[in-house]
Length: 70
Image (cartoon, rainbow, N blue to C red; front, side, top):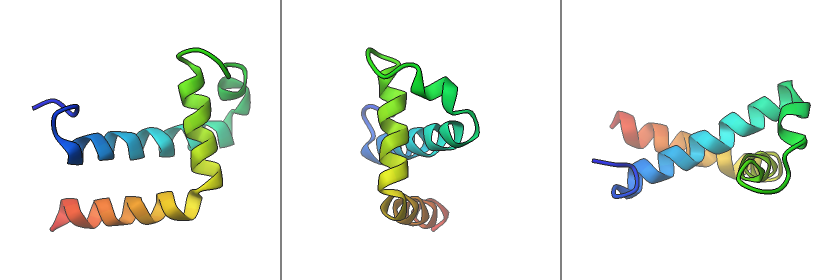
């Protein structure tokens, strides 16, 4: 089943995208910052969400991990 049709998988993909973009922006900011518009701007926006809402994103990652394990 595709991640688009399963809500739990869609949330997992979104969380992984946010966490990955935030990590890439922290290690190599030039890769994310140069593309602020268009399709590649999605990664810039995901990185900004991860930076500004990091406590909520980390809590969501912990909840999703616990849900996957149990």
